[in-house]
Length: 301
Image (cartoon, rainbow, N blue to C red; front, side):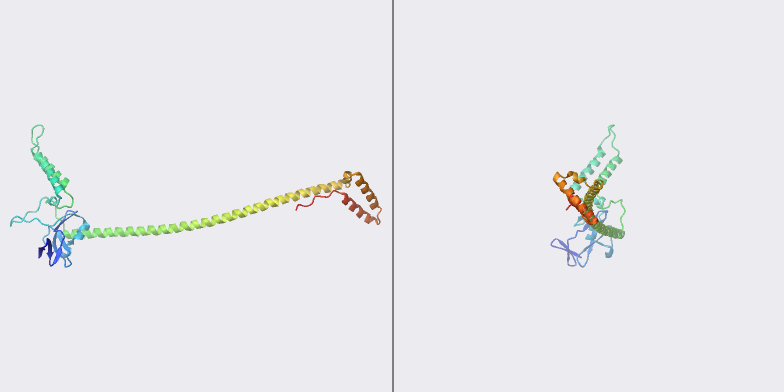
């Protein structure tokens, strides 16, 4: 049995600051029924007179479903007769400003009862009733209590549904985590493949640079060899021309000698022709001719 000490309600020596009434977003109204040994308040649907403790919900569990309103006191009956259920329970949990505006709209809709049509006839009552219902529908927040014409919900089924919803959310979350982990592994593997390709490209670029340098060196060597071949070909052509010239006119050089040199050459030639033996004379003549010829160009250094 609970007692009030210092403004707080106590159950079995445990203080409670939890509200007495909680309204959730699905339209359920929950009332505090008991408290655990650890001081946790337990709630059951207001429409259920008796409810097993194991199916009751804590304030934290109701918060997961969404709390839209709460109260610390319950309306007390004015007399011994039990008080009838509220027709507009969702209006009882409105904040004062919203309740004030809702009543303004409700009065404005009801005042339509005394309005007259242009022909002087009164507005039909059912039109006024429709306006009143529209005002209620516009201000009724889903989950803030049930209207008297709505069926009551089974709290056990609601708890089971809530648990199933939580399970489905956890399952979806786990799947998303697995998909994210798989995507991350895929990205890591792709980054590794890209890094390996970049390494191979760098190696190929390095090999290409080395090959290009080798080709440039070989081209330079080839150019040197081509210049050398051309030089020796020119030298060979000049020598062949000189040989042909000498074979056609063995003593053509004598025409280029001055008078004294020519006289000396003829005297030496006559002396060589008298050399004994005759085989030695031929050798002397060749030596003499070679000594008077113009010196040939030497090989390049």
